[in-house]
Image 1 (cartoon, rainbow, N blue to C red):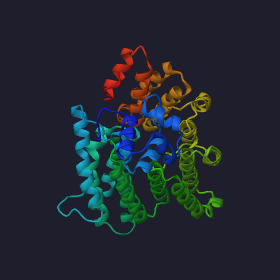
Image 2: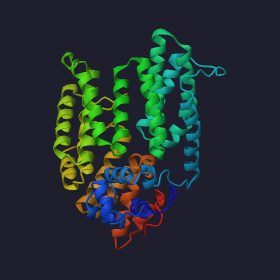
Image 3: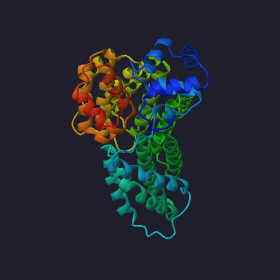
Image 4: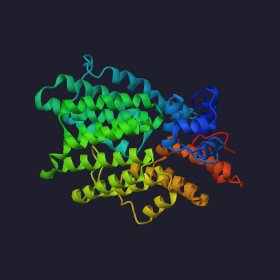
Length: 402
């Protein structure tokens, strides 16, 4: 199997399964999935969920990206320019504890202004802008940390956290999950240097994401429980950053529980997050995204992760995303809605949601593996093979669907 080949997840799962001599029944047993689901995904009748991909990858002992076919083929000049940043980021992450002696570094105020500008690119899920700006500023921010002392070093380390977060975001969107994992590790290192409790929590949040994405849901839940136990003693004071961390970690626990198939636990963590968001009372974005809007988005996403499209749509029906919500979050919400409509069986609404996601956050939508899976199933099941479906598939680089 070659990453980026036209086949979908189902074909890759079948190939990996056959290479080790397993039947569909054996894979279902080893991955704790139903035989009917394995059969439906392999036949292209059901879209593979992140939980399904992670469980099969773990059972088959292959990488998640191998089953997803990531990184996807670079079919345009923009694709090539975006992917060109990856080599620079890879080198930069290896040099995290070193100065850049030949580099002239601007003042911390100037670097702060530039970091805040790039934050907007991440919030907008603009992969091209991130690719163009992250590598050089990451180097400069790293050098600033190693030349600073005292409080200025702590502030510079917080800026470096943000730059590692940006690097992680780009690598993850493009399907370089191992590089994204390394960026999370570097973010955790910089967070400890900064002493900033929200960046420390953000590092924990994304470490748990890595565990969940790899199918190790029990470890993710145990790790998050440990993190919240350390926070719990401070909650009585009611500091906002502690509440944000507490609520965000509950959302991540809800994801791990949902992907493990434990709906009751997922709903319990979601309720805890909702109660915490009510205490915070507003949406907070700069470091760890949390607040009433984000909890609403996650409530829909968790139902989709549990393969309950009807519940997801019911939750979405009473939820309106307010103006000013980061495009990365609202775009992801509409991708989840497309998956929910597909699960619900209303294929006419699937493409509408995907088109909305494209309008809000085009590069997020183009590179998202669940969009590729959704489009494949939509195209296969649509007997009319509508021109609009073909056009959308071509736009996001999904070949061989019709």
